[in-house]
Image (tube, rainbow, N blue to C red):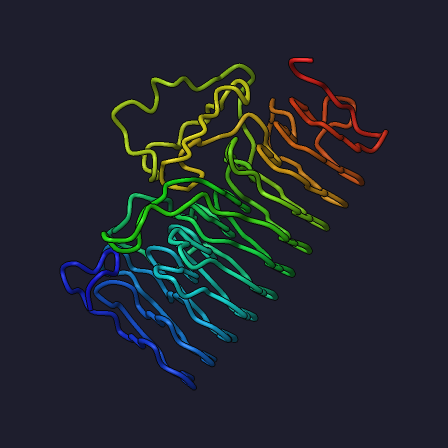
Length: 373
């Protein structure tokens, strides 16, 4: 097969279904493919249940890739991968649509549960629930330059055109990953085939995330970020409990020079406990690879929101186990922001910094600071 990114040298998967209907995979143990462990491409009416995946022998060792499939159910499975764990992609014009993922245990040195990076056909009606994300059991020689605990637990990304519309994620328990939640609308605009026109700016809307607990995580911070010409729409966050490690020192700032000559799409050189002094230092990088390693430790420890139309944050906890000089939440260029029932490290300090937020609706108990008034 040609035209699939990362497959130019012909490395085989353990399982590969292309344009199939009525597929059922159950009760198997799949181990150490040369590339992605499984790839379901442009398939319909697929059920994958009660499988066990261990994929730690090569680069690009994803656990399972659901690529441009419709009516796909993944359930009751254990996946431990060197690269991304459960990945939804849209490497062609076919959308990834009506996908249900539930009751899975996922471990990854990279991104545990992810939509993207390829997004040509888009993602519609995606439901992810009742899953656990925890560090990998793999020991021995490392393959990827990522992190032993994983880079992200949940990543939603549209960077190569396409539309993400209707995503529901609930009841997820996260242990130890560097970043609990990463939502990114960018404009990398990579063509799915060389002869295709350059994809237009993608869209992301109608995303609901609830009942998520993350503990022992790193200090990257979670984020919801679009770009100036492409804002994310209608994001609802409720009942989140995020506890990061902390331990940062006041004034121990990063500089732009830290990024020179280094790959910022991996986590190999981001173990420093430094952080960005302000949101103005956080580069847009709309053409870059979408991953929180681009930024490392954000200037806030809870949630960074930038270039979003509407976002509601309700009944959430952002706390650090160690010292934490950063503010919990920063919002930049947001049309409508609503924050209520939020618990943070220190209620006597600034809880939210605002810059260019047109319609803030913030609970009176939270101390708010307006930047660049």
